[in-house]
Image (cartoon, rainbow, N blue to C red; front, side):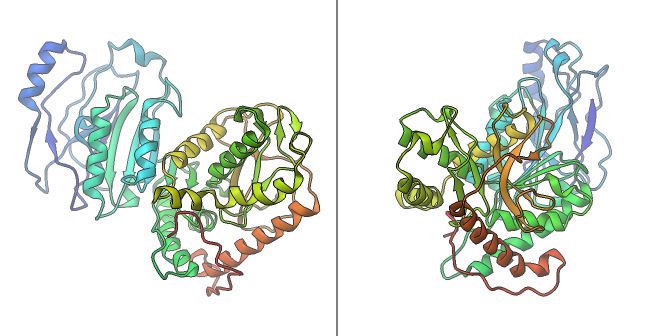
Length: 441
């Protein structure tokens, strides 16, 4: 049993509970009586401590609940502050080592869908226990407590720990996956350059925190927009973490493209493969129908309407998020959560032979002659170890190349706009056009 302990370093956190010496392996009736007597809210005091435990299949004896609380740890929540004696539990014998997953923007709509998928075992598998470390803000801390309560009430066996906090240096401690969702939406009258600066500062700080306290091989998926440039900023502020470990989420764009190709071809979407999104998560992105396949055949052999592919299909994918906002009055949340799940699974599951997936990754050393030192969506394959390699066997034509250069130019302009956040000097904003991202307004 690994022991982690509580910090009282931030001001607004969940109601604190006191637990007497308690083993979960006791008889259920005796547990219920004891639980009703010993589970009681107590007033918050500066010196109060709670021991938060993470279970393992190596537990040999009970661990005391009360212990000294070192600085630099975050608040555990409710039932997750219990210690567990699982010596008698057969199920845990097949469990893997616990995985620490940090999520920013954890009180938001996307996280509201994502966290329960993570906790259920849908993402990392039925034998993989996890700890969730949830980052919010002072404004959202009560909502974050509500999220923790719902996770608590859902009785997920694999969810062994939940911590909530507003300090990334505490929440990101030992994180092996960091899902960076939280970002400021674009307000009325705000220029794209202003959004880049405001959100860039958030991701610069989070990059520094990951660099300081996370696992040195942490995998980082940036969702908050503009996600490509935010991923670059985060990466530049985390020099101790391999640059290859940073991803900008373009999987939702890939999923949208597969859906539209399937509808046009009259097939189910599982027949669409090798779909690449090139470039930026913006309206300059390039959904690549040239290399995609339907039922194993090149798309252009299945869909003869090439004008539709070049015009309607491309624009439909680029603007899908904006249309959804017009229809529903809010940006996509559930489908974004699903695409985050897909992105993680693509890295921890071997890529099917001959197929690939899209992710915004660092361009240094890429085989496509794309300018280096930006984060650009490209086709990737994985062996299922959390790492990836870029696909070499792709083809280009003038149509695709022309559009790749446009999205490349946009990302270079964004990079110049945040030079003060990446350590590259004075920022200079010359964005070619205001390609508004879905959900920014």
